[in-house]
Length: 461
Image (cartoon, rainbow, N blue to C red):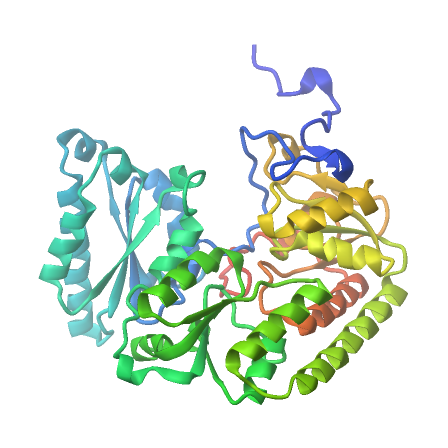
């Protein structure tokens, strides 16, 4: 006889899905196993990120069940014209010809795109993002042969090696890291075109705010900033490689951009997003020194003014939010624990942080919170129990920072932003305080917002 899971033990115990930070282990606070996927879909996936490359076409070669998610993503963001797929069937696995299926399927798509160009004038892609999948690994496919033959048949097109291989998540670079590395592999400019006064900020899905610290400081120093999000043509994309320095702020982008800098023998700076005044100060001093700009006193005074603006914004937000409970989740920013510490220091009532692991970049703040905020609650987001351990409506007005925090608490007062977006430096702290205040004063329905894939992208739903 079928029985509802957990029926005999209702209500479901929070064991293994909820823990006080004083009792939490580093870096994985919760047992790993069967995982739950919440309806919060604002974080970008491989389709969204790949679409940032201008004049590129994505081709996925996989079974139809795996294809469903990426097809729906492309359709929801109204980019079907830049997306194609090759379905792998069981007979292809049994006959051992997956290389041929991949090559001929991709070639057929490109021939049809050429026919479309002749009929409609819509240009052929300058690059193809060819996604191979887990099946290619399982069967030991000769990927070198696949790319070699395609490059010989279509020499005018750059074929980029992309992967949709979730089986590789636990070892080596993650799929997200490999994606952000592959995106910049075509950059190989003439060294004579290197511009020592250009800095390319790469590795994130989002362009930084014009008001962010980095852009303001680089403008003061007379540097030109380029970002992938500003590129509308393949030629503009290639100009990203002319930079004398490559800079990355997003953790998942560090591996790829550092590899790019090493390959092109350029300077590399990793200045991660942070909510810690001292860390931001050190990062901006590092930037200033690397640029060789004179006038450290100018920088020091500039930073003090920025910190004053942060304090004013945080104090004003505290007056509005008061002692209302606050929850934070990791999808809002790569440093959820850092944000929790900042808010606790400024008197906010932070109750819960939703996360599934703790980044090495947050180990120090994790230890600080264990001592200084031992009752802070950590809640998993992918543990199977979270399917039922969420609220339809909070018992009191709660500020949720992040989409998963909003869904888990049922709060209609939430900051709708993902992955740190355009926030950076002291200006990022100021903007976060303003976003919190705005969210607390303006009710909105999370059910109609967080289900949309790819925060900031076009959505047809």
